[in-house]
Image 1: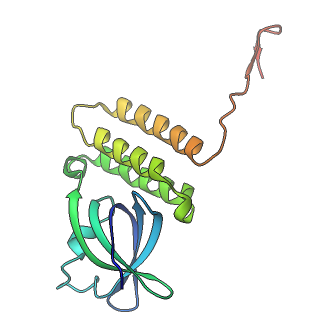
Image 2: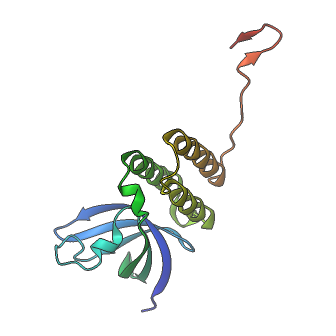
Image 3: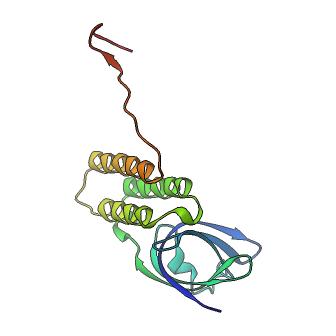
Length: 166
């Protein structure tokens, strides 16, 4: 069974059955992957700490017949300073949720991964103000929308000839 080594950001996790978890990963090369980790919900699990939502990790994937299993993981970056700031934590959570919604299957390319990694790195810096972080989030979302293939068409809300707003 060939193993695939990837760099991934954990987008979501769900507990299934008693001790297993279903993780959604945004891999750098393979796009969005859903993987199962056996025994991850147990307190003795060695992988669970490496796979917290929002962590960037080096993962080893083992493709099976129907699902992909996770064979190993090691944290690369946990964007630790975000955990100390509630506002940054909120932006991180919303950004992860939006990427999960916009990225469809394996068509999520390196651009999604790079955009999310850059956003999380910038937001994790403590020297940014709340308004600067919100501005960065809005730019990030507009960038994600364009990566996903949608066009942002600005509409004209002001008519100069009438000097009024529509």
